[in-house]
Image 1 (tube, rainbow, N blue to C red):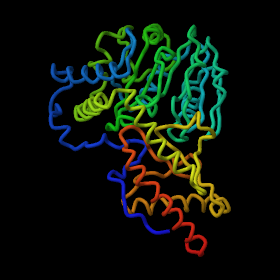
Image 2: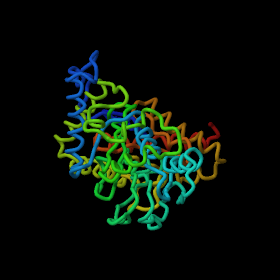
Image 3: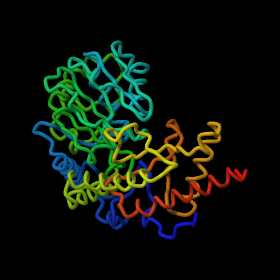
Image 4: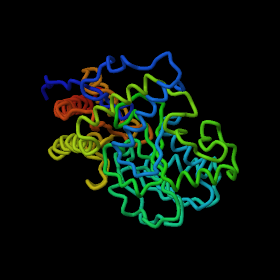
Length: 391
């Protein structure tokens, strides 16, 4: 197969941190409040602005609180688990590495006595209908390492008694999300918005705020300081929005503001969803014509439109020992990296061998259209090497 000539203008297809928004340059950070305290009047104003813009884009209902916490999305999920769980049994749904990690944390580290574990293999979903309206629920909106999303939130009861905690980091701003079904939503800027790493965002419903305030004096485990939002038993005004527990990077805040303004310019969340769906459509068209690649997700209904995961189905590949399969897949991705057409598309280390291509809203469809012939070329090149005995 001849080597393609057209290359993506942006070869960054990593699933986190994701590609920056189109046209981004470091000049976007020129007004960053560097060398200043985040507790200054100006610092608080920037933090309040980033919270307000997120709240407006996501159309949060009255009474919902949103703010910046430490430790990226992982820190935000852990904060929710450590401060909110305990009073009720917990149903946790895990079908890839991060969701299953929340099960481990609940059982092994928090040692919660009443945890129902609902698991599925990579590529599929557990039975979400098993969620009990009287229990707390933890689930991932989109499985970044499996390419499997939750198709809707209809399975969550409107009259639920427990809280729903949703790890939404690679789904928020890219998938429809009925926020009234959710009491805690966590994410990070580094995913769909293409922001910088280390900062988490947590959204709390009034029910979640009430639980946090009631729960803090009663939790049976030591509570790290960065998780203690309800100081003196109350989540005070501004405690999330601009008075953060830890010190945020004002460079990252400025970058997040830039990304949010861009999101507004392309039509808000509906515009971002349209862009992600259009990008997925490019990959779906390619896969439909391919004899060597397929989606890891078992059905279109649960297929992610951000972290798209692929498995190799070519006969030559399936005949290889497992260790050799991993080496062959890495050889394909290494060729693409060397050519400067695709960075960081290896599948997650614990996921089935294959590839993972981010197609969220910050990626241009034209770059994905340029990428697919290169994927075919790299596969054909490596397949020929194995056929000729050269590995």
